[in-house]
Length: 171
Image (cartoon, rainbow, N blue to C red; front, top):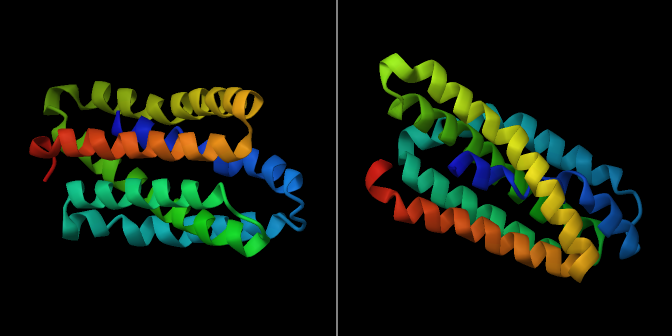
């Protein structure tokens, strides 16, 4: 559930941002993907160790806060830099979430059920991307890009609530 929650908003950053930038008149959007892709590439191996040091719960809290703030900020972007900064913040949160939720899945799986646990964990990513794309598309059509990003910030905040509600299971 935590992996799903941390990735369900990703289509808004990975796919729908191009259309949003076009709508608000931002050119050269390719630089957004250079910055966020580089952030993801560098952050994933580095941030994987952070949850070992600060604990799984704190790492997840940070990732959902980063994502919620980034999505809220994207809603009010007016130039390329205003897209890149929250985009990189979002990718930092996503990188930490990926490593942390994988560690949680491995730690909490019973030894005799690790294969089943990893299969369940592995389906969260493509499922969240598919569901997230449907949510984003529906929201854009219904209420527009700005409100889509604000609603998705609320969804990221939902991941924060799930983390807090399960704090006794996360160290």
